[in-house]
Length: 252
Image 1 (cartoon, rainbow, N blue to C red):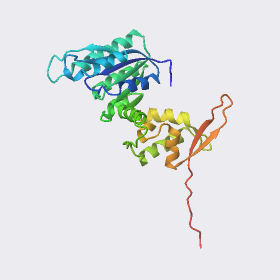
Image 2 (spheres, rainbow, N blue to C red):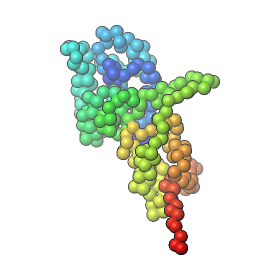
Image 3 (cartoon, helix red, strand yellow):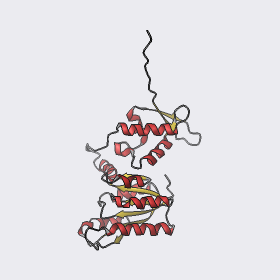
Image 4 (cartoon, one colour):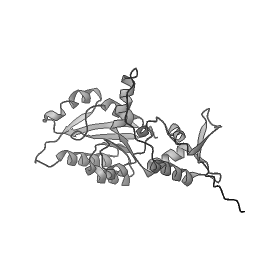
């Protein structure tokens, strides 16, 4: 995570709900400094009224784009043109595209080809091509859950989380194998980075865990070991696939 990354945040106002903007900006700040923050939409439409106060509170610049033709999304085109202008300005080294629209798949791919770090934020309905075109993709629903937990900490709130299936366990297992030493151990930090590259929307919070360590521990399929770090007081965490013991039948 490069906190020195200068990020251009471009929001598709026609495609993203106005709720949890503050949480979204806080999440983006974890990955770098959002130096450019713009939101695109037709501000003459009543559907964007909820955004207006939030823009002032979060220093987001609204960009007006009229819908010239019915059925055509002019906002997407304006956002793509601006993204390329920002790219060639050389002012940023990362982009955050906030949308659930697959129309931005080619844009994300082009930005990554230019050496940009691309983070995507959208709803769970976001088509997979846009998700995999980003270096990392974060679901808005995760941010919503975190807010509900903070506000309603006195009440028991039933949150919808994804179940850890055999598919996720297989993904983690194969990633550990890719990085493991001769004894089968792999550094957890490297495992997390490679998981992100293999599946950009992989996030422990999708499964109800704040971090990767408790998620891995909960499956019961992996061994976890803490080791002393000579350069820091924080211990290093290593993981390993549990060995499968095969029982052979005795010869009679």
